Length: 231
Image (tube, rainbow, N blue to C red; front, side, top):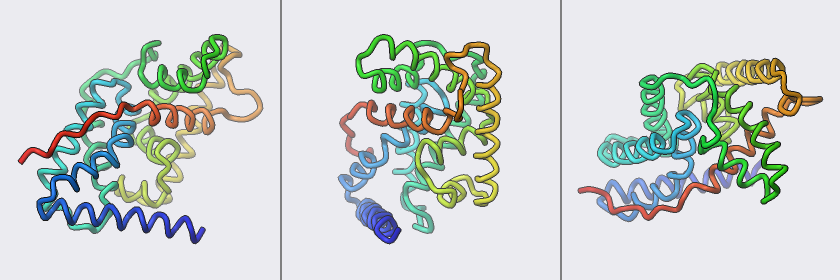
């Protein structure tokens, strides 16, 4: 536990140093912040919107807004919390502007990414995973925006309940309740499916499968060169 705390403190200190340099006019320091957090911000946006183009736009907008308002960042929270909140608000606005889908298309980037990584080139396994992951994503997409966001930050992004509470400006108890409610709803949807291939058997598949979805997605985020900040 002590080493985990030390590692978290080290990452926080590194980010704080980059923010200080960026505030002083060091463009490369801000570029480093973009490189450091872009994959996770992109993953957050993609999970909430299900659209690669939307996720790209949201990620770009979030960092442009962060750069423009960097002088307003007072360091009372960590930089990743601040940028997450900016991206989250933008993603939820985009979600409200589009109709919620009831089915997940086979070309959904979340689905494609997860199956590609986890099938290991086995066509039969790819078919099995596609059915299971598609059902899971459909269950996820039926959650309310608040429950979706909580699942993304905790189960997918790995934030602690305390960190998620800071991002969502609520309490740890509320985060815990939302996680429980989201899992209950996802499990209920999966239990109600007619297809035995995707219905959970002895143990809920939600935690392990949704974790694999995120790991697959993060690994496949393209390494795009970061342009110099606009001055």
